[in-house]
Structures are given as structure tokens and as C-alpha cells.
Length: 89
Image (cartoon, rainbow, N blue to C red; front, side, top):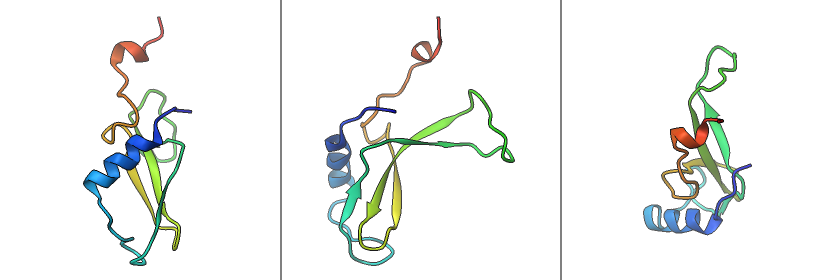
């Protein structure tokens, strides 16, 4: 599980998103999840080991359940892994 500072995500959203209401129900409020998840490229249902991954943090409207995925690296919540860090020596 990736450890990150939820406050960084909230600060990022405040700067970029502001006080916007939910696009689906027109209300809110929003809740930032405290866990990061990953998106993987689809390969006809096959798992590709070492394939590209995108770390995301779900932000959910507590009124209707609409969920927006925020890129965890771009938001500054998780530092990008360098190629050297990813290799096992």
C-alpha cells in the first residue's frame, strides 16, 4: 500500500478544482480516499507483469457516489519511482 499525505491531495484539489459541485448530482460534498489504487492497461483480461501502471486516488461525492480518479503522481501525493528504485539488485 502506498503511503501518502492526504492533505497534499486536498491542497492540489483546492488549487485546481476549487469549490466545484459534483458533475453528476450538482451537490457534494467530496471525500478523498486515504488509499491509492492503480490502473493497469487492458490486455484482453491477461495480467502483464511489469506493464505500465497509473497510481490514482479516488475522490467520491458522498451524495451520489460519483467517483473521480486523481493521478497520485501529478497531484504530488506520491513521488514517481525512478527506474533505479524499481529494479531489485
